[in-house]
Amino acid sequence: MVFARLFSLAFVTIALLAVPAPAAAGGDVENGRRLAEKHCQRCHVVSRERRFAGIGSTPSFMLLAGLGDWRDRFLTFFERRPHPVFVRLPGVAPPTNDPPPIVPFEVTAEGVEDILAYAATLRTE
Image (tube, rainbow, N blue to C red; front, side, top):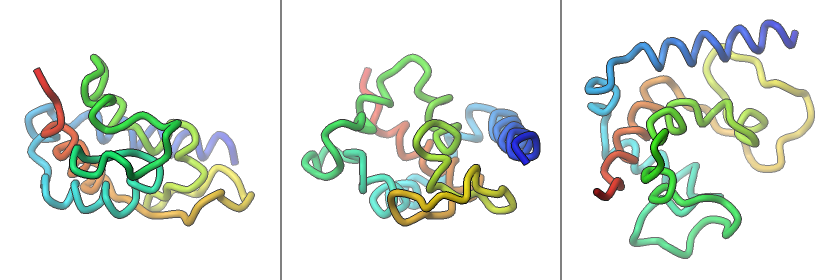
């Protein structure tokens, strides 16, 4: 079970990282914004306009987008704690049968690319 879960996450991660950087950044920015506002904003500040949304203990999308490894963080957010408990990927079993602390949501590889494209618009030089 654990091996299958790790294999599934590794497969999805490799598939997403195999997308060339320009293509990954070419996702649908508007859909990425909608996905971030619908799902990520429960915990994170996802836009400059809504600075008081989210939970104060989570990093904002603007902070994350400013990090050197920002692209990797957004491409693999679904496997970074605590996300695996409530983020669902099509065809990948959840890591536990314990109830998630918040309502789970599903995101596709295309949705992850869209969120990445939106996050790229938040980067400042």
